[in-house]
Image 1 (cartoon, rainbow, N blue to C red):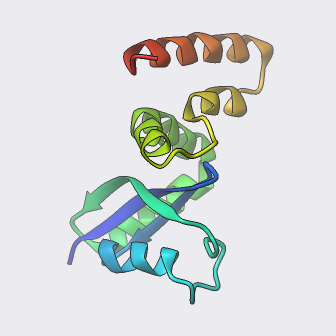
Image 2 (cartoon, rainbow, N blue to C red; image 1 turned 60 degrees about the vertical axis):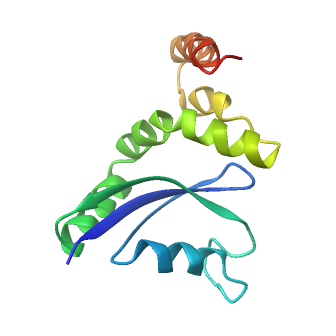
Length: 126
């Protein structure tokens, strides 16, 4: 049975990483009023997904990303164009183009993030 590792995006710009054997049901659960987990009380949108041949592989990949946050950050940053589309469609207040600067640790990285932000804005027509 296939499995999926996914990123979902909240109306506040938060990104959540998860894995499942049923993507449609899991996303519905995240958005359910009965949800008592960390994702409760917010509207969530599917940001990106990676399919695996087995559920075990999907959960392993999720676990690896949680142990190596820089890999999750790389994936998150790669989804900026999709996040921007969601943000614009629903008129959310967060700005995905700010994500690179949030994740930089050094001043040098911060200036590179500004360059990245400018480049992404040009690519998105902004």
